[in-house]
Length: 214
Image (cartoon, rainbow, N blue to C red; front, top):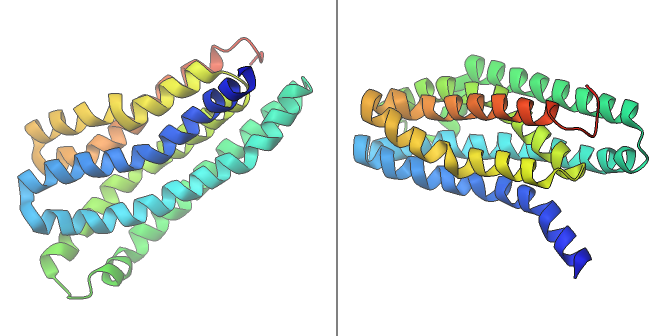
């Protein structure tokens, strides 16, 4: 039973990372439908589909580092552990910068892939929203890496706190509050602000750990 509990507890944060995208998707759809109707939903569908791909990339990076983190943590090899963490975070930031640069440069071409009917209104909405929404991935990548790092080093509560904050506790009220005051601009910045807040929390939790002397 102890082994089963350990398996479920260590994998819980990863599970929440996976389902948080669905929670965010539903929340945004509810708010956008109220503010802009079907055209707003159509433009968000473009953003959401691309965002799911980016999240998958960051998740894959985090899962790829997890075996190394677990190995070095089990060996008490904290020097290599910190190197893996550093390389993973650096890679996440490089990926975020690359993706955002591509979005800024080729946004029209990217949107055209999903906008087969050449709806001008949808294209204009999606273009603006991609540029705002994708700023959040500079922070989201860091959050996903740190969550996986904490989980792999048996800091289950901290990893779970970050996952729940990203997927529910912060993002949901932030979307509703910002959309109330700033409309659609508030909706798109809600993701960015949420990930920024969670990044601050993540860094604090990661640095406050006693397992590794920073």
